[in-house]
Image (tube, rainbow, N blue to C red):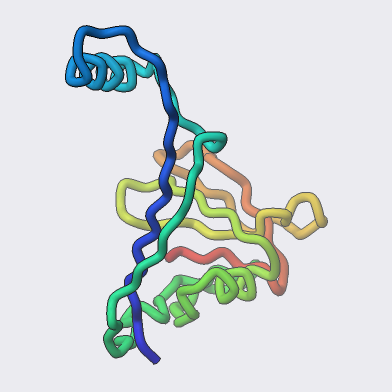
Amino acid sequence: MKEFEVNITETLQKTVTVEAESREEAERMAEDMWRDEDIVLDAEDFTGVEFSGNKGKEAQKDERATMDVLMVEPGQYAKMTTIGSDLKSMQDAVGGSIEAAYFFDDPVALVCNEDGKNIGLPLNRAVRVNGIIKIPTYGGEKSPLLYA
């Protein structure tokens, strides 16, 4: 398998009428109006797209294909485990759509089942920061909390 970098270039074009003494002055006036956002190009001004790729190189294995997480299942002691770092692996670990919360200064996310409360999963743990309960988290047998 190879990796390719592909440049995608979209072209927008609009013609405006400007009264000026010379072409150079008209171009400068148009540029000033564009910079001041008096002239805005949007999807209606789309005139084309080009794709150009490089020759490619051998794909390197992603060193972050997995991640170590602290799995906190309801009624269980927390345990370290390794899961895939992709979205599907996290969804599988919590048993549904994921929701991430960032309560700490450290680069740590609390990941739980986004729909846990709505689908009737029992409370798992409460998150307390400086003694204040920030969020009750829901989980079930198949819906642990992940601290990644």
